[in-house]
Each structure stands twice: as C-alpha cells, then as structure tokens.
Image 1 (cartoon, one colour):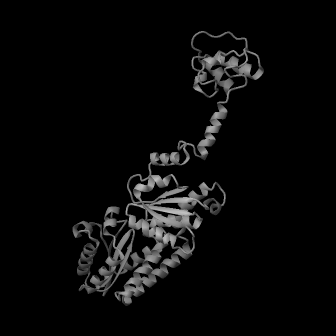
Image 2: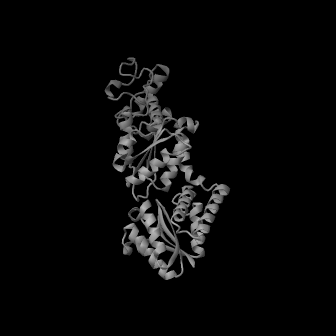
Image 3: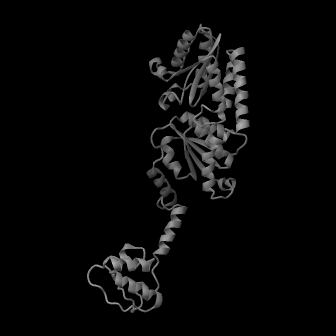
Length: 378
C-alpha cells in the first residue's frame, strides 16, 4: 500500500474554482465514505480549508488511485472533472509526506507561517477517526505532521511573519502609544475570510478592538470566521458578518480596515476610502491627522505679513486691495501682475516700516530682478 494525495489549493487554482469546489462538513463525510468504499483506497482523510482541498488515501495502485480520487473530488465538489483536472496536483509516497509536513508548518499557506492550519489538520484527523477511515498509515502520518508543525512554530517563530503587517499598521495608528490602549473600543473591518484574513482578524482581536466586521463574497465564510472570533476564549471581541455590498457603509464606522482577498484587482479603491472618510467626518478625506498638520503649516506660511492687509498702513507700497485673495509670500495671486521691484519694496517696508525709494521698472522684470526677489524671499 502507498500514500497518495490529490488536491487543489490557492497555488494551483483560481479563487473562483476554489470557492465552487469548497466542501461543507456533510460533503466531506460523504467523500470519505465513498473513498474508502472505492476499490483502490484502504484509508482516507480530507483536509479542507478556505484555500485548499486535499484527499489523502492509502492506495494499492498509483494510476488507478489518481483516477479514482480525482473523480471523487469532482463529484463531491460539484466542479466538472474536465474543469477540475488542470488545477489538481498529485503527490505520491515520500513526496506526499513532505507535502503534508510543509502544509503543517505553514510553508504552503497564503500567509507563510499561519497557525490555523494545525487546527485544521487536527480536525481532519478527528473526522477520519470518527468514520474509521483513518488506519495505521494516516493516523501516524497526521499525528507526526502535527508534531512537526508545532515544533516549527515553536522553534522558528514562523507564525510571526503573517502578523507583522497588521501589527505594524496598528503601531502606526497608535502613533507610538500602547497598541492595547489605542485599540480599546475601536471598530475594525476585515474584508476577506481566507487564511490571511483570519490571521489578520485574530491579530486585531488580540490587540483589544471591541468589534470586528467581516465581509466576504461568500457570506457563509464570513459568518464562519465571525463565529470563530466571537467564540474565542482569549478575547472579548464582538464579531459579525456582512455581505460585500455593505462594505461602503461599514467603512464609515471603522477605525481600521484590513483587506486580504484573492482578487486580482482593487477591492478598496481610493474613491471608496475617500467617500467613507468624508461620510464619517464630514470633511474631505485629505483631512487626516497628517493632512490637517500640513494644512496648518500652509496657512501659517500664507498668513498676511504685518501691515499687509487690505486696510494696511497708507505708506504700504502695494495696493493689496487689488489682489482678490490677499497677499501671500507663497501664493501665486501675490505676484500676478506685480514686478520684482514692487515686491522688494513691500518686503523692506514690512520689515522696517519704511518703503525703499526705488523707481519701478517698466515692463516685465528681467532675470536679475527675479534673482533679487528670490533671494529676498528666501
């Protein structure tokens, strides 16, 4: 007898095929029963996650086993065999063992090092044991895979890689303060319900956010992730699921949003974020903390110089009332139609209170005048 695995994952199939081929709990049980009833297979186990569906079996014939397992996957997933076959991969004997160990370590996940796969492998083994479809070979294999995976996570810290982006984002939002204090009472929106989104949501829950809203194209997956988050023993987060068309409204409530999907295009566009921020604050999306600070700096730079208003001292050499937007060293309106000599006179008057007695130049100022003006303004 020999170990054989036939499956598809995010590495071999597009998201559309994976979603259609997904197996619910009842379908997994039926697949196991039909596999062990098939002639080439003596043992069977199914590893089904958001991003992979794999059928492990102990077979006595390689080619017959591949054909039978492929046919069974097609029948129970609802995807035709001709459409499914180009996305299937096959591992045999030692390559099959190597593959499962890589999966258990998180090396084959969308997020390298994600730890949820260990729980999914454990559930797969328990399901096969309940149905008595796992014999000595698959029992030993899956238990060893769990040991390898736990050791990899414990000794290498590989699971930290998947959390780094969300953790970094939270640190930026907290502006150097304690993340737990900043997150208290905050609302988070997670778009996607795959392994990467699940890890991001778990990181947000551990950080202390009060609410997590999960949006996904397949609403059932969003509900499943929300239920897992709400039932977690180590957090008090409230989680709920929403369909994808609710994202614009949820963005107006969210303090932090994380988008992790398998889409090839943009899920959150700049216009969508801008509309959400404007709807939340009543101000344009540019008025973030950084934008407000920059606007303040611009206003400070454009503050009228002493005695430079429309009702300024009569000795001012400029008729500023003719400039609609007022005088501004940085503004274009201040220099429109005014020569360098006049602006230089105003600069001297504003600094010392007296105008420089310098005749105006007729016509457009030359390069020398412009150079003097630039030097004076600098």
